Length: 472
Image 1 (cartoon, rainbow, N blue to C red):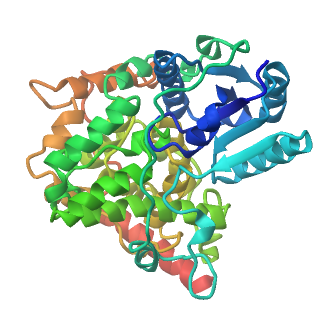
Image 2 (image 1 turned 180 degrees about the vertical axis):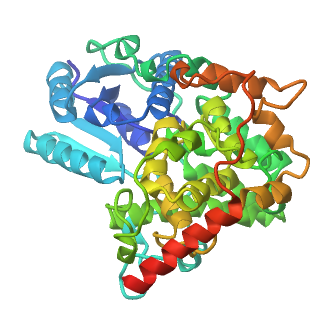
């Protein structure tokens, strides 16, 4: 066995361009063994993100093979697996990209301590974020809690240039054994929905780079004005690829910054949205219960309902509110949802239907291929009114007026709602092919009447808010 063998532990960083951990692993001509580990955290994923992760792993395994390398797949406790691979390969170092959610921090700290106690170099690298969460502080040394000052604090920072793409990974003399990806059945919970979503997913580094290039070429100039119109196609769609590290935020930042310097009107707003993602991770790192607990403690005891029959109609895209239903159906068909639509469906569930925001957060976690634990948690709490830098609770989005403002031509509605159309689009038809059969929904069924009057729903929510505030 070679004395210069390095393990590259891949998690959500499936790319060659701007990959600090991969660059470090390949330094000094070391033989590199890329490895992906199916651990307990993967079992906690919802159906859609678990399927999409499997697609990312499989795609990157093929990309590595094209470079004369391999992706070794193992299932088990990461420390046990890595120790086994160290023993089998004679590796002296393990490199990986940092993760910042609470469970990953705990896992990685244990792995690092265990490997170091064995005399193995265990080295973690940045790469998932533009800024390490601990590196951005207020003047008092505290974490930021409001986005605007966070943006002002980071927008002028020097962000190092992206690292050159790794063109070759030196193969080891002997490859360890690998499990088969198909045996893991990562997409099994998606059932028939996987075939539908696969048509709309953009998997892999090349597709991510194409997405960025086409967005900057065709849409960044009018991004600020058009981004809230869900049928406009004016957003980048890169949240899917960022989730699996198929493109780095630093690569996106520098490409956007160049367009800003060249005078592209919407470039700064696009960069702000990228930093909004950073802010979400900043918060989750410093406040790790963000995904489960009300950020504003005064919301504890508020009369949100637990899961209920109304929430089930919401889940099925059968509320009778076209904007809400089109958005939910978009999620089942494409695995993603337009950001404006996310705000509408979250407001409708947490306010018009008076349902706990965590019910919605968990359903998004089940259904989104771009599911991001930080952005998802912050987004739901922002809309519900319980979160950091939140919209005030009395801001209740009206799905009808929002549809009139952001979808005047009914293009978004027609794209995803089959009922009432003489010639429904394929995406509208795909909804019935993607959803569980147990829902019993069919195209010939009539579109439902609204579940609750929008004015009545708003007044009910505000009455509950005022009662809670006055008795708190």
